Image (cartoon, rainbow, N blue to C red):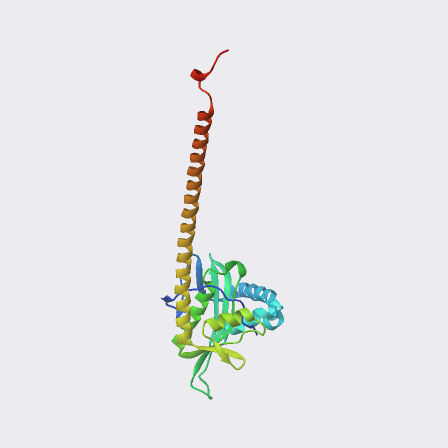
Length: 248
């Protein structure tokens, strides 16, 4: 139905209660939040899917462009047992989504797995931690459900997504990529810590550069003042004094 889209963001986990299943909200930055999708979110989810389709180079493989049909498909995923649909918001406005499904156990295996079908964040909302927050939320859901592995099926030619999944530990598995739930949680936690350190170091570097620039301007001003003073002295020394003037 819908393939893996664009991912962005970082985060950690904080559990909240829910009447049906555990829900996980990850307050990484003010105004950024993740919650389970409800019936009122269907129109927003359709818009996000269509935005992802427009952005993707292989949009036809991502999802249909028929909004009504897409709304029915999303509604079925939300209703099917094991279907997991998350909405990511920025300042209360839907800006990202995650579609996944818990699979198993079955007649063929006692194992439970999580199939990650789509992750997408609007371009203007990226680099704020929303994508990683949704992934960390779904990884915690997988852990609670006893899912040992998380599977993803990136679209052909989606090199950015392939690199992103590889960085999070997803390894090739036939047409899928797979990572253990525990390994995914460790990678997400590590990336969140690395991002925090990078932001802190970047701020310290900016402050240091500003101080250096300010010191350079001060030194240049002092040097200019010194040169002006020396020039004025030289001019005064060259001028003949009134006492040395000869009258003919």
